[in-house]
Length: 213
Length: 393
Image (cartoon, rainbow over all chains, first blue to last red; front, side):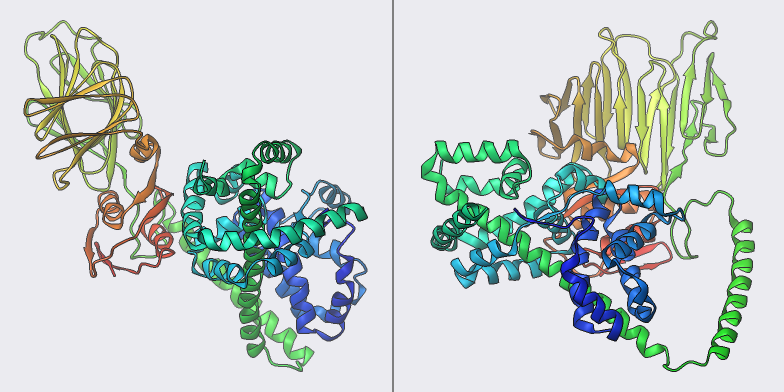
């Protein structure tokens, strides 16, 4: 269960890659970026690099491919290509392929909540909850949003977040606490009650998937 | 248990692991818990859905925000580079740029080598370097010795006691020569200016760390039934055990008595409240006849009215300065600025009344002032540095 972004995968985006290389298509480019942003950020942070360094490296890679898309026709496996480019820039290595293959094998696994499941949660609950959350997310101060992203989306442990961001684990707890405190107040009791209708529907769907497997 | 109590699970690592199905142990634990408490099943699932939804939304949001930034960068770059380049002129342009670049690098390196002696941080002329180890020692006879410029080794000797500077930032007392002059007790004072810090090993092997704008007066030799010193400013003490002679610290208006302990005192003249934070051991505070006993993890706050005890204080925050960093935990802006003004020796002026800022985080004390301000600017505050005056907007 869950979408695993693994070493040999990323094939769903092959058409986008080809469109991008051929015509520098903007929405294909965006699709690639959105997919790899989360995955690369996850890897970078897991390796203990700071958020700023990871963002910069990511942007460098994507800026490069944007400007040089015409030269990338020879790339057969875009996933490996992007991944190696990212890792190489992250470490500034100049070594050759054998070591890089080893590096690829030892990558941490990135599990994402299946979007199907989330879609059902959204449909089941009142529209309010999604917009409350969006509102809340937009109003979050930079640092809190960054840590919430690392904890709730990338699902890094508190210790990993402390190490990657170079702060003490207590600071992480406190910052997350502050952010979530606001959220608790925003959600309130009524909205959560509305979710319970969604839950019943969700349960049915999940059972359905379980049976399917 | 009420539904309200369950909200705290949003921060609980094992509950989050259950929501994200991260590891078998936590998933099992919570599934069993729900099975054992069916009355909470709905609440737990509501909470789980909120967690999953939050994760999903913030993931989308972050990726899209970052893409928007990248997009801006791209459009800026593409508006600069013209299309349809001539390969010859490209080559020419590149080699011209390379040549200029190398020249600039060469000149730059030359200047860097020239200036690269001790300066810790100065990025541009107006930036302010962090504090350093400096202090002035005043002997019993009134003579002053500037400790930072003194050479390592014996700095002075009085009454048979040798005062030795060991390494940058430390001073210790050597009695091996006592024989002569046992009678009179003489006092020394160490004054640490703004932008300075110092460490002393007292005659009884107690260690004291002194922060900026701090003054410590102590006898060159402890004899008799008590060991008494006087402090104004901020100091961290690790007092050597000696039951026969309790260690007493006198500050402006109150007295702190200890046996063998580690504690931090903040007692600046310009603060209304003096704080003593105890890390280990035990300490008694006396003021105007009122006294209170502190336990490790407690903090005593003394003001003109009396003594107040606080429990479960963040001791790491109280002693962060001695370990080389500023630690802010729910600190308000005036508190943060006060610490900066002492360490960087700048005067702080507030242009507007600012309320409601709470700072959480750690910043190394070795950073230059500009670097620290850049970090604080992320919390939406503007600064202006004019010479040695820092204006907070």
